[in-house]
Length: 545
Image (cartoon, rainbow, N blue to C red; front, side, top):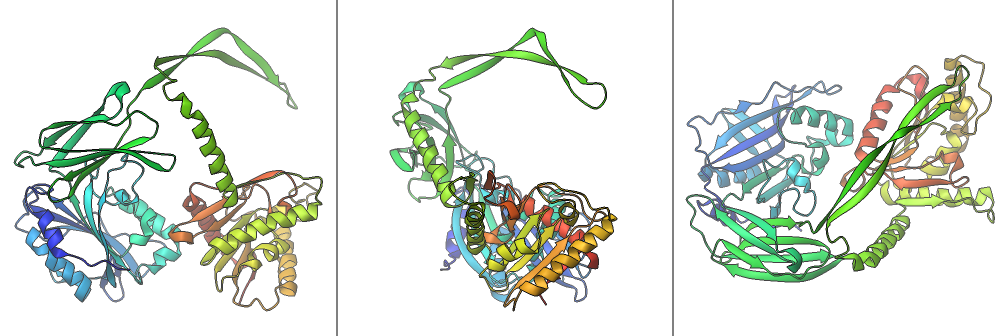
């Protein structure tokens, strides 16, 4: 459901003295240019209100030279900045959303199908968690910013970047070397427009009330802005509960916010008491006790040797003892330890339910075949849950049977699936060891490719609506790899990845842990980098027509 843009709301907050003393706007645009047609497309536009006067000349200034990426010969990228008068903002937004273009100094910038996402408040980082949008907002360090956003619904001009995450990451790194902007983690915002009004009118400082709980808030207004009444709320969140709230309406520069002492983060929100405009949101953490660790070195050292085929290597390790001392009362909230333990147990159970952390134990009551099939069922569930757009499987011991047992179970039509195997490792004995082949490395890889290709030709059946390519690494291409991952590069708007803990052919048989990795994009980029290097005919095991 789309929101309705209210230009009067934006114009009112731009007025002097409401959120700041704005005098002009800085417009930063990352552009995509198609060389053959000389057309310029918007990759991302950020419009920021500022308290400096607009210069007479508003011609765009380019930040660095054009950016070219490998494999995109007909496309280049650039960064341009120009100033805009406050009075021109609404008209420019209407041009972008209606006519889908801007014209400046004879140059046309094209926009996609823009839809207004909404107007909200973006706190600064550290105000209760990381704010993803702060990766592209300008200097959102203090009181936060009001944001208006338009999103590109079809993202046609930027589709190549979305389908090849490594290209987006490469572009993001170049852009961030020129501006404090990181676009790789905000691919859903590509093609859009952001309007940012930083809150400059008010600066708030908070200090604790000691063992009484709560906080004392002090306010300082920007010179030239008349102080006005504020509504300040202080609340605490713990264990999923929005516990206690203290609200005061103040007209003086200091207010005491009374909130009984208990665990959990405290959040303070400041609003204009009359207009209701948010003027800040802050997370508050006050130190009640502090522990100090003191390391005491011992004169004696631990001496030992590590055996080797030659002379044993000698080592000496310095030994320390640690003494812990505290300032304050570390037991002041100790009665909440049972709650913390219960939350931990509940979180672990939820991780297991979502297959984000699953431990497979050898159960002597079940056969290896049964344990293996149970673990495969979990893996297939992940594929069914997250593999609508794409699935990548990365395993040094992967063979055709493993691919048939996993990726062929993806029920999603035309999901883009890739698999990489380390063919040499399998021919040299597999994950449990064995006798290495006496053939040259190239011949080993060739025999693996031929054998596994035959297995898939004989067993793939109709391959109905299957989009799969299976590649194998040879010793001269890419790099050796050890870890095993299943990757969903386009799941839920970003990359997800799980470490399997063992190869597909031994899932569930021996003890291992399958767990979701914190940074799926990092794993996806590494896979994609290796994939692009395995691009010769000898690397191809099998692919759907």
